[in-house]
Length: 282
Image (cartoon, rainbow, N blue to C red; front, side, top):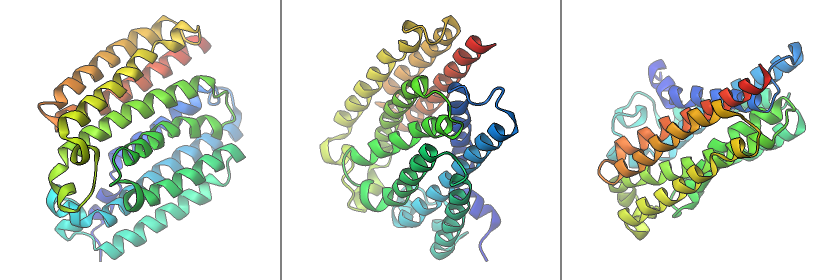
């Protein structure tokens, strides 16, 4: 019997819940949460739940495929330490994916389309894309950013401002994933993966991550400059930008700390969009 705690750990509950929160942010920023009635509320609740379950399933199947790498990089994870068998992890992932699909198909067609693409990408990531320099990082960046699109599409909201959030989150997440690859070089090299730091060198990979992050930071004031959001948005997004740039600098000396701070900065930037939207409608 698998350990219940081990099954929960497989889903990375912190990441799964955070992804659900980003889906809610997308729905809110797109204007599809306030005043939508019971039907609208059911849509965004279904979208959030589907996101949490799908991300949890993706994390579980990633651990299934990565079980040999994790014996080196993450020996404390459920499969390497014996809390869950590989077969149990695969079955649990399938169950979560199934429930996520049932919830997703109740949503509008655009949201269903995004969900289908994302579910396929989650399954294919480890086997097809993770070891390809840059492509795996770009796919994870897209998946993170697309949670905002999914939330907006789920409630039939206006996606213009969500598109900006999608782009910024995707770029910031790409940078963080490259830093994570630097952190995981030992296990990835042993498994024969060709991540960016393995293929082109760790410092070159970190310089690329910093450049991509800088592009996101430069673009981040756009909602304020275009008049979509007011000053409250800018007052939060600029400190988030500064924090993420400092995290990129940290990554050259301590990739683990740097990628953790980059993740935090992404969430603060998402908060800026929530505040920006709220300041317009309230």
